[in-house]
Length: 358
Image 1 (spheres, rainbow, N blue to C red):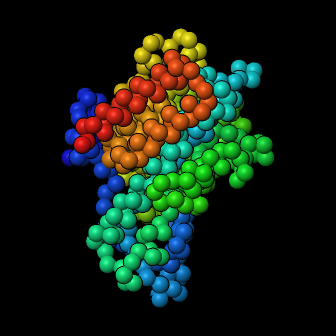
Image 2 (tube, helix red, strand yellow):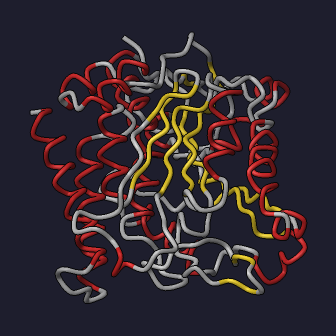
């Protein structure tokens, strides 16, 4: 059974057990070997490893990947952090979300992206332990040191304003990514965070309808790091406010062999006071060229869907739940607030997902 059956099961509300049984989207690769990877190898290093470098280092033990690695590709505004719905002369400064204050990170977002990135590494490490014999009798220097690919960023922010808008290593955003990986309960590392950043231009900032096409074109540039499509697969995370759906659907139509799924954060310019008691309506998931496109309101909801689709471990889902709840509590968000209503609805789905698995 394929990803088609997974999405159909999600759409009609089949049990998570059925979904998970057929939802392991990363397909085992025909055996291939990558030489000369340092212990802290990143996805970029893998893609760049040359034949000459491999030849010069024949004395190093090669290792094989059973599954391609997953690189999360993300938008910034209204995906990682809220735009606050700010506009200038009627032009949006990054997005439309007014539920969270401008600049607020969404609860659980960094944990969600870490767990997505980590899953393929965990799969390869398990495969290595179960089916491969290490020449030195342990995993030292091989898959135990495999690092999840860093998050690639596709943003509509204008490259002409890069001096003011650039994501720097010392920025709160970059630090939040690094802290998540460094403090992880599994496979902690200092080598994960923000990777390549591909910007938009003033043209798309003024002519809004061009943003989707620019993000897709930038994604095609990103694909050049692994022209074979064998080392890397991708999950795109965006939002419904700035033509990310257009970009994501185009990725799925044009590159279903490497794009595993698209997740879209549902945002609104309506004030939270206008939300219905059960929260904002979410469009149903759908398939584009046999690959899933999923809408979500919180990152706990996104993690529940990712777990159902076989893109995240159950333990990873629980870590996203814990992190999201911790963030809202730390901010002192009162009970009954729309943020808690959204989160509690998705926490219920997360526990249903886990309950049906065990």
